[in-house]
Length: 144
Image (tube, rainbow, N blue to C red; front, top):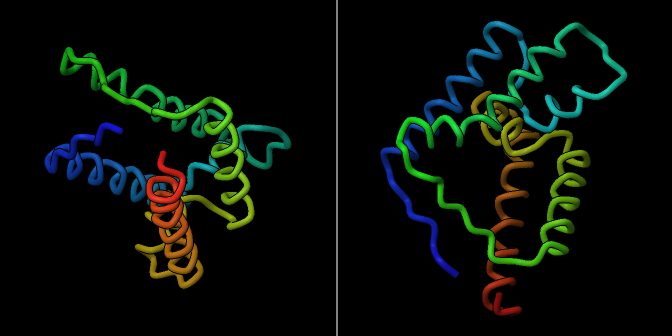
């Protein structure tokens, strides 16, 4: 399995952009930048008039790699060496976890931890620990 290339400068820039977007959303909209919550409120029933803002936020997430490709002229190398059924199961488990935990990594891990929310700290420790254990199990027990 090829390792993803880590470049500190791009990681720092990406982290700063995520943090800035979370701060701006909180400052101007009073909302937490939790992606699962933003995406789930794109579907009816609509409880406010923020549909276009949510749509723009998600469109920006999708457009990001294309903007980087246009700016650098280089394709983004991303490989996921696994089967489609495994990806579907993993996606469903992540979705279930986001619903069950009342939030996702962005809502709890970025916004909640920065607000020193005990619930978010517990959620972040849980999903990070589960991720570590899953990788260890998959690589060293299953051999994938």
